[in-house]
Image (cartoon, rainbow, N blue to C red):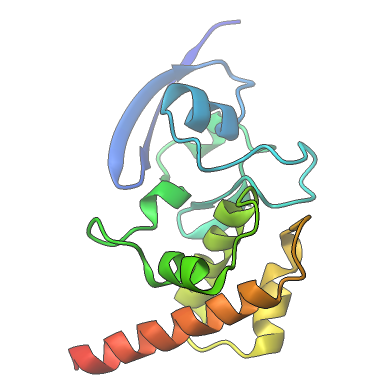
Amino acid sequence: MKKQLIDFRVNGRAHEIAIEPNQLLLDLLRRELDLTGSKRGCDDSSCGACAVLIDGTPMLSCTLLAASCEGQEITTVEGVSEHGALAAIQKAYGDWGGAQCGFCTPGFMMTVKHLLATNPNPTEPEIREALSSNLCRCTGYSQMYAAIKAAIEAEQKGLAAAK
């Protein structure tokens, strides 16, 4: 199969890579760019462990052709940190035990990042709705909700202090 050259940005860095036309974005990220945070959990779009942001919108990288990302900005869980420090959601997940085994955590974090970018003060039903596309097989979700609420409070305090 003839490879094609694509240009895109991942976590703020430009890349030009020759890919097979049928290569999935998840495989490109993990194999070519060594960004292993996104996980292959199901291969059928049902768990969300592979979620990344494409131009700010959550997408499932296990079913997305890498070639379709030409010219776009991709953010993986490795790009969530802020200036080399943990982002509020990453810190809150650790503080509140939001991750059990951690396999699904990257997908949840990407979904939460998008939620907070579009709705900085979501209600609990809005949080639950946003996370309904992500599956965790080993927790009851209560620690995740507590972590997300703590992250929202931390970000709001940070914004207030900055003013």
